[in-house]
Image (cartoon, rainbow, N blue to C red; front, side, top):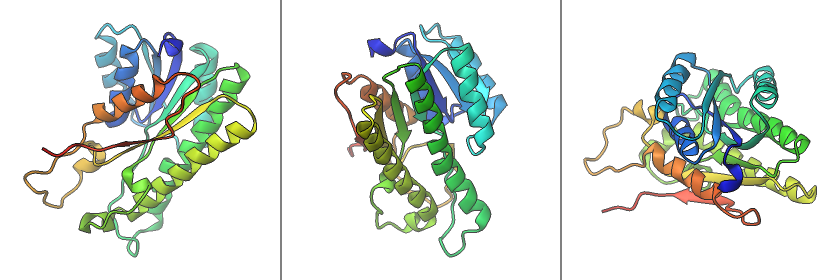
Length: 248
């Protein structure tokens, strides 16, 4: 982690949930963070909270819609020119629509894949561009899901198949980018962080009654997994990091 201390990280979806928790863990480790989110008010709240805690890392924020290429290009140029080369990118931005496949409308389909897939890839492309330009041996972490690797046979999963499909794409993109870096002899790491259920704003909209003993991960657990992946030596890679909560 020492090699990232004092360097810059970009975290998408930093307005709440996993993104905000990840930003805080990075600040604790002495990494400067640029938080991205579509919601400017949420970013301002996170900014005030995190910068009041006296962490050695500094939090910056920028409104950015990861569904829009022009926003992403402008944002990464802004970070590179005014804050410094990006060493770490953590793609946390995501949406979780509740719909069956047969009832999914084009708006939900487009928003899911534009955010979870296209936005993730476009952010990775810009990060890689500046990492190469600045001779940075960086690390890109994509927040994936258990549902990005296999489909569990549970009733509620039928309402999240569009989300699962987008996360399967994240699995492919993460590994595909890693392989491209190897072929080009570019020393940029790629890690897929794949948690089970996490208590965030995305899951708060779930209306289905839950069993009394239901236990879910907290955003900080995913954030700590990101830190663990970053803590590996330069010649060691955690490709896929599954996170599950142990049952009592």
